[in-house]
Amino acid sequence: MDKSIEIDPVYYDHGRDDYIDSDFASETTSLSSSIYRGVFENGRRYQTVREGASWFPSDEQQFESLEAAHLLCILLDANTENPLYQAPLKDPKQILDIGTGRGNWAIDVADIFPNATVRGVDLFPPPGEWLPPNCIMEVDDVLQEWTWRQSFDLIHMRQLIGAFTPVEWDLLFAQCYKNLIPGGWIEQIEGDPRIQCSDSSMSPESSMVQFTQAVFLAGQEWNHPLDTLDTMRTAMEKAGFVDIHEKTYRWPVGPWARDPTLKEAGRLHYHQWTAGMEGWGMYLLTKFGVPRPWAKEEVLVLLAKVRKELQDPHIHMWQYARRVWGRKPTAEEQEEKEKEKEKEKEEVKVKSEEVDAKH
Image (cartoon, rainbow, N blue to C red):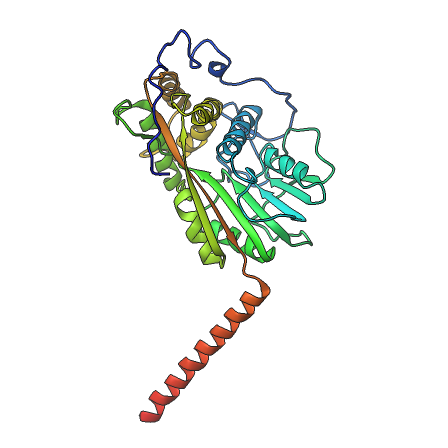
């Protein structure tokens, strides 16, 4: 998507737009909450399965952000055959959703494919009480040896930036490859935490730019880089996946775009930001801030300034996102690849013998 997002020129009236005095500006809507055990830091709850390994809080406020993200992803692929994933699967039987969060994606896929078994796995139990009969939610660490007996037709991941170190990412993609059926698909969609602006409406010294840059640097300091959007294709190729495709998106923050779909996407992304930004920044900045860890109060002061900029309809900010999907080779393709490897080994052996014979 190379074309810039066109700005709606009439969208500047604070008295009538969706930035102020509307449900859009309320930022979060209270949903049913349940009490789960976890560890609390700076007033936020975190998972304890792999303590200290997740920078995302596991609480109702963060689940609100994840739900907005789910709707955002569906909206921007609403004109495709299946907005939930782009892999060419017609009748999957076993599906795994890694980092399922609230479980929205797994539940929706289970509804579409009632004859499939859909598993959602995360380090913290999702808050929902009702599940389709073919949807299973599990708490587990995907970096450990997988114990599921069946192989999967599709493995899905979304918004896992910062979840793993580079070595752990390689391990995870290897696990995915191992546990897919021949010809099965993997798909991942991630956003870029760095903020963009196509015009001069956002200053390079803005609070939003300061915040996103600080979070990005903290991820590097922790050795959990937040550039997954740029590395996931290469990681899939390294694991052995083939037939890899990708699709790039621009997510506007706020409903400033002229296009109706992008305008609604901006509303959803605004909700994702206002519900999620404290969770995105608090853990990383208070533990791995550069050049030193931040105090909680410093994070909150900057976030207050970011919130003010988010509510300004004159600032046209957006972020990149990318979806990548690839296939595990079929049994025939794997057999052909093994034959090629054996042929290469034989050629090397022959050349080595010829060199030895000359000497």
